[in-house]
Amino acid sequence: MGTNAADSRKRSPGMVLVVMLISMVAGSICMNKVAPVLTNIVSDLAIANSTLSGMLMSIFVISGIFLSIPMGMLTTKYGTFKTGLFSLAAIIIGSSMGAVAGNYTLLLVSRMVEGIGLMFLATIGPAAVASSFSDEKRGTAMGLLMCFMSFGQIIALNLAPVMAASGTWRNFWWFSAGFGAVGMVLWVIFIKGIDDGADGAAAQESSVGATLGDVLANKGVWLVCITFFAYMITHMGVFNYLPTYLTEVGGISATLAGTLTSVASLIGIPVGIVGGMIADKWGSRKKPLAITMILFAVLIGTIPMFNSSNFIILLVLYGIVAMAEAGLCFTSVTEVVKANQGSSASAVLNTAQWLGAFLSTMIFGTLLDSFGWSTSFYVMVPIALVGAAAALCNKDLK
Image (cartoon, rainbow, N blue to C red; front, side, top):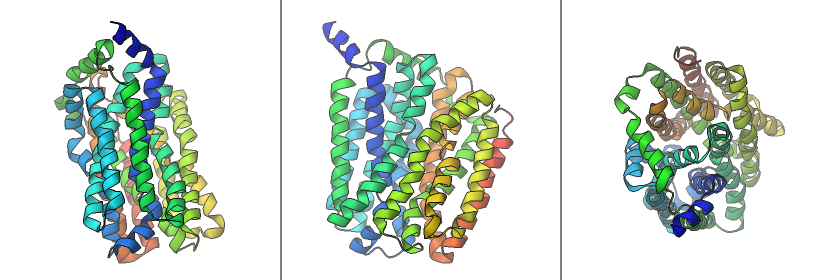
C-alpha cells in the first residue's frame, strides 16, 4: 500500500500531463525533423526525386493508418505504462537507426520504426490526460497536450538545420534519440503504476463502453474525418515542403528557412488554445472549423505571391489560419457521438489523420516533380475547400 501511495503522489495530474507532453514532443520531433534538413539528406544519400524524399516524411505515419484502432485495444490489454515504454523504445531505436543509415532504404525503415512510437503515444497520451483531470480542468489540459506537434516542429525546424550546418544532419537524429531517452526515464519514474486502481479501471471502462460499430455507422463522424483528412493532406503537404520552398525560391539559407517556418508553429500554440476557447464561447464547432478551412485554402492559393521580403508575413498568417483545425476536429468528433463512444471516435479520427499525413507529402512531392511550385499549391486549394464543405454539411455538429 505504501508503494501505491507513493506512486499516486508522483502521478499527480500535472505530472502526468508533463510526462505525456514530453513523450509526445519526442515523437513530434522525429516526425518533423526531415523537412528542415531535406536538402542535406537528398545530397548525402543521392535521393533521385521529390517523390522518394516525400516518402521519408509520409512513411512515418503509415502504422497509424492501419493500427490506430488496434493500438487502442493493445493499450487496453497491456496498459498505459508498458505500451508507453514500447513507444519510447521505438523512438530511441528508430532514431539511432536513422543516425547510422548509409542508404535510403535503411533510413526509410528507421522512419517507420519511429512512427510506431508516436502512433502509440498519440493514442495513450490523450486518454491518460483525460482520465487524470477533472471535467472543469480537462479542456485546458487537453488543449496544452495537443500543442505537442507545434513544440516538436519548433525544436526540429530551429535546431536541425543548425546541427546539420555545424556537422551533419545525423547529429540531430542522435539528439532525437536522446530526447526520447529522457522521456523514457521520466516515464519509468512517474508513470509506473498508472494502470493500478481508479485510473486503470476508468480507462478500461471507457474502452469497453465504446461501440466501434456504432461509431463507424455515424455519418457525423465520417464528415469530421473527411474534414480532418482534407486538412492533413493540405497542411502536411504544404508545411513539410515550406522550408525547401523558402530556400529554393526565396534563396535564403536552410537555417533561416527553418526558423521562419517555425514561426507558424510558435503562433499555433496560443492559436490552438484560443481557437478552442472561441468555439466554446460561440457555442459552435462547425462555423469556426469551416471558416478556418476556407481561410486556409485562400492562403495556400496566395503563397506564390509572397517573396523573401515578406515570407515572415506568410508564416504569421499560416500560423493564424492553419493551426486551430486539429483541436477543433478532435473536439468535434466527440460531440457527434454518445459520451461512451469518444475513445472509439477519436481512434477513427486518428486513422483519417494519419492517412492524410501519409498521402500529403507524396501527393505534393509528385505534383512538384510534374508541375512545379505554383501549381502544386493551387491543387491543394480545392482539397482544403472539400474539408470546409464537409464541416458545413455535418448536421450532427453544432
